[in-house]
Image (cartoon, rainbow, N blue to C red):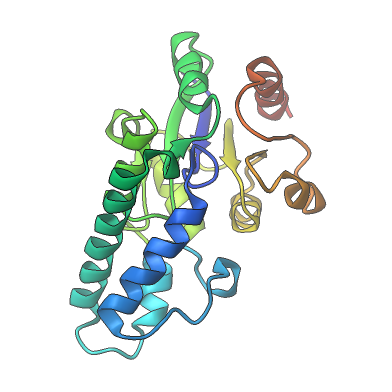
Amino acid sequence: MTRLAIFDIDGTLCDSWDVETRCFAEAVAAVTGRPLPTLDWSRYAEPTSAGIVAEVLAEAPNATTRAREIEYAFVNNLRAEYARAPDVLRPVRGAGAFIRRLGEERHCAIAIATGGFASEARFKLACSGIDLDAFPHATSSDTPRRRDIIALAIRRAAFTVGVRTVYFGDGAWDVQASCALGLPMIGIGRRIAALQKLGVAAVFPDFSAQDAIIGSLNTAWHD
């Protein structure tokens, strides 16, 4: 295939933001003994799991060990929340069906790029009925900076950054990263009004309007 669609996870494929934020904050507090400075991810230099942990542990001894402990505690928190109430980790409407359609109809290749840890991403997608390892992917376990994560996923899919590639995301940081890489972006999820204000022309609340989203993909590939 000569075209690539690359997907963020949180808020784009998996509607996990509410429980994710709480579980992450609890993991950081449990390991460091201190609360997160803010729950507004946009306030961090790199709003990814690894990036935020690195910032929190910047002056800490044994930072590498503590980062692993935070990741382990975070994923355990997510597992416990899911066991209590599976609906807290659910797919964005139509996400799995849309990805399957892209593959079955050979519209494009597919890759996944996420600011989450690898273990976090694998668990969240499994809860949404999507196998992370079925696709080329990159996570903040590879590199903490979002634009580098996206670029790495593109390379792992055997594509060139900026060539015949469209990015699906839901946050302001996704807009910033896609602009930095010269990628057209399609907005998905709860923040579509904010994305429109940032200049994202094609926005959808979920993946239920498959034909319209494919139309936006085709427009982006041909621009």
